[in-house]
Amino acid sequence: MSIRELRDKIQKAVKGIHVSVLSESDIADVNEWIITPAYDLNRIITGDLYRGVPQKSFTLIAGPEGSFKSSFICLCMAAAQKIGYTCIYFDTEGTKLDFFTRWGVNIDEMLYVYSPWVSETMQALAQIKQSNEKKYIIAVDSIGGYEREKFLTDALTSDGIKADQGRLQKDLKQMAKLLLNICRSQDSIVLSAGHFYGSPAMFAPAENLGGGKAFKYFPDIIISLKKSKIQGKDKEVTGNEISAITLKNRFHPPFVEGKIKIDYINGIDKFFGLADLAVDAGLVEKGGAGWYTYNEHKVQGLDNLTKLFAEQESVLIPQLNEWIKRTGYSTVNTQIKQMEEENVDDNRSG
Image (cartoon, rainbow, N blue to C red; front, side):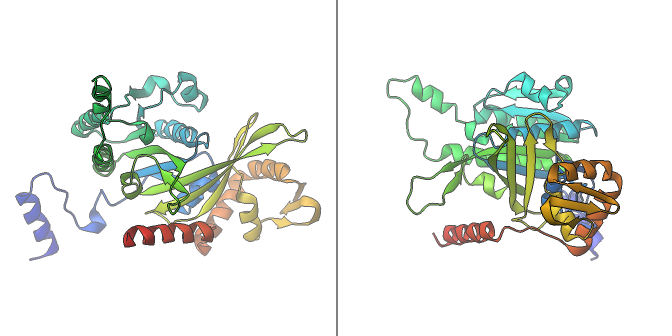
């Protein structure tokens, strides 16, 4: 029996299943990407400056409060709307309207669902699944805000709130499975935000993810974000620098680190993080006193280099992208890689 005859036999016997020769599969194949707000962020996700979040993928953006998670989601949704995706935002925190408009989301073409109860969100996701429509971009912000409705009913009784017995994590696991299924079968994208929190246990990892283990296992990509303040000459805070590291990635090697700069006046610098790459690639020459040379152009300071990148974007960025792909250039954070691998080994042995 040939492989195609076996495929036809399985499809006939098992209704609703997807069976194909892998090279011909429209589920395993990815041919569309959502650009992120920064070239360096695209790079750590796919190894390509022009390709960001892949279609048919589930991405978790994790970090402490105020570390760009929700902003990242909104910027990706705004970019997805421009190429025909339908935006659905599941909110557990009560995000304000102007937050979406600030990052360019068309709120007239976005479905907004607020509920802190995981069961209600599951019912809404089931309707999306049953629709069989394609090209959704679904945001869940954030998973740590979910609770079971039993929490409310218990609180209304004289006995008070009873132990959960792990039911919430089981429900969130089922929700993660459904989100992943929608990604794969409906050419869609899921972006979820998760909070890191410190562990009081002596021997536990320094940071745990709210929402349980399921949201570590099911996402294709996990991006960890950490924020540091940028201060001006008078020590006033003028913006933030975000460090982004891929803790998990099914589309590109993990533990790659990139940088994002958010200026409170000028917004996101999409070229930030590319200076060192351009120097390593030999496209830009770095001299003393902060001087940089690209072809016949010579500028001083990173701010002026960013302006030069913007002026030469159509030439310089393709050259840099070709070098990255040809050389397999990577910025793996070996310390984070070792810590994550040790945590995995500890979980397996436990």
